[in-house]
Length: 327
Image (cartoon, rainbow, N blue to C red; front, side, top):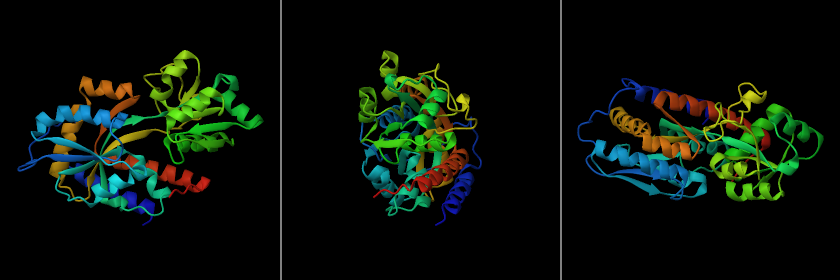
């Protein structure tokens, strides 16, 4: 299916789901739901930032919904295994999927043999947003984004990422095109080893997750040049955005998203997302998000679908330009 048509279809579907809701509405009971435990599939290993944030939110939601809310970690294949299970689930409100947005904005473009249909999963809440931080080894000799671009134009420059198709990889390629520079990619299995080799001087720089690099920025082992999102990081308020550094409109940010199997009744979606929105705005959950450099959004179905459609177009174009295909 054409990706633009696919995401237009998703946008229309979730816009319909959002009818009759209002941002300040409290969760109202849907007769008969939930009558048993509700499962939320997380296609990542337990213990990561997204898993921790969700567990904090569920602690606040469970007294409201009055049934157990159970996390089912299903890691593997860049989230595709868990997504496939959620896509096959009954659309009765007892199975949901909690994942980064790249599951639908990136994976359909780079995995030629997905074992689920993208339009079988509907984004019903864009819970939070996070960005990447461009850091360099101090020996590279750059302190600003402008200096980084000048260096990259003058001499070969390498960058590390958490792997092919990761947020850092895609962000760097998007920025490289905007700046008119060429960088050599050194992929790793996760942001932590990528960061270690930037610290060690084996690689020059990298767009990496803020919480991963923050202690080393503070210690002086890394130099922070810019953050990729539309807003400055609360953890690094002194570091400008890429847009503030001369690239107006640049916004490479990512999200945690709640998805529902297509066909989940709108009233159940409303009850679930309202409870989640209320939980996200509590001090405890907001603090958990802030610790992992995330901003609370609690954006409903229509807004979530619109943003995912736009990001799918952006990352699809990047993947096509660099010839990114994964097994």
